[in-house]
Amino acid sequence: MQLLAVGLNHTTAPVSLREQLALAPDQIGKAVQSARSWFARQGAVSDAQEAAILSTCNRTEMYAASSLPNPLDASAQFLAHYHALNYAELRPHLYLLPQHDAVRHAFRVASGLDSMVLGEPQILGQMKDAVRTAEQAGGLGTYLHQLFQRSFAVAKEVRTTTEIGAHSVSMAAAAVRLAHRIFDRIADQHVLFIGAGEMIELCAAHFAAQNPKSITIANRTMERGEALATRYEGNAIRLAELPEQLHRFDIVISCTASTLPLIGLGLVERAVKARRHRPIFMVDLAVPRDIEPEVARLDDVFLYTVDDLAQVVQTGMESRQAAVRQAEAIIETRVESFMHWVGDRAVVPVIRELHESSEALRLAELERARKMLARGDDAEAVLEALSRGLTAKFLHGPQQALHQAQGDERARLADLLPQLYRGRR
Image (cartoon, rainbow, N blue to C red; front, side, top):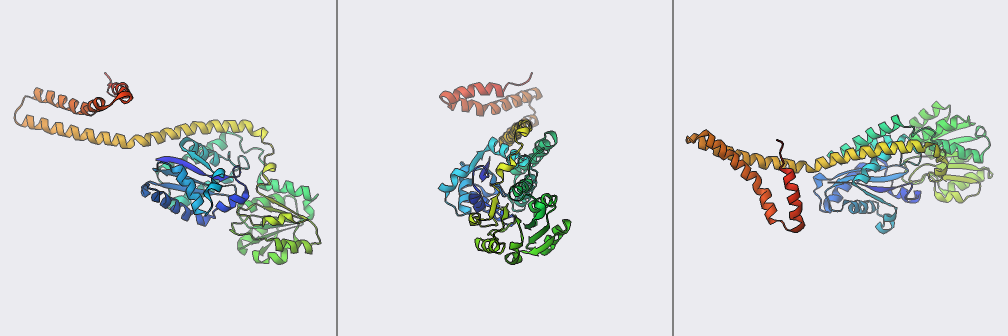
């Protein structure tokens, strides 16, 4: 079995491509099952194929364990096929990581070292959700189960023994910083949050600390929107009310799981006109995007995506380099430990076969010895025959392999066999 990780992230692909591969939480289980079926169609034993998919605003990647001769290429082809994308155009943006590299990548992702916001903790929860979904879809086996359990353990070790998360600037804090570039005082502005998920909760907390004039939550489910709005003495509206309400807000932060844009160019044009060209600051944290990218062309509209916030969140990176080096050292040690476990797993079938064949030889010689004793042969002679018979049978295979081998193969066997049969005295 070969371990692998294939995907793209914020460093290899723009948001316009990432959103084409993004999967909503309720779509991931089906994708995992499709991946396993894809491996089977490529010639692999379907029951032995393992797959898990992680999809966030910054990445979509598949982890797998496969018996295919070239599982990396098969996995990359699957991502293109599943999302109906041209493989030749997608391939330059994908990373294809085998074995050690795949394990190292999983450990780094779980630890927040591969995130846009270095050390951010949300990715660990997202990875755990992805693992639960993969398990429910039948995608986890021995290899991936062990990989992810060790990933979670490494992430805990990194976060408790290093300061990797110290002084980091979150996406929510970065949004506040950008808003200050447009408005001198956020306290004078009306803020709208679209969605009620974890990212919106973080943003609401950061903007609420600036004491804006008002906070409004627009969500598909009123109950959840009202629950979040109540925490910040705000109001809640339905998404369907956006066309009539959008012009009221100076700051708009959106992050939903919608697969299609919620705010189109025409809607924003009407809002700008109703505002008499007072500026609107908009942040789209969703992937796929909630706000049509054409909105950025409008005068008086300042639209930022997750990629636009990347430069802001890198603030203070230099002060965390020592923690990064410490975390990388921890990860490297744990990668070697895990690969040692993988190596042990690879020889288990060989060891089992050796035990089974040796047991068959032992039982055959034991039966022959019992027959000799039953007919009255001398016990000493029976023991001698038993020992010679066992020795001859155990040596038959290696001796035959040595005689049949040629050239370099014979030389390797000649060096190896004495080491295998060098017993303790």
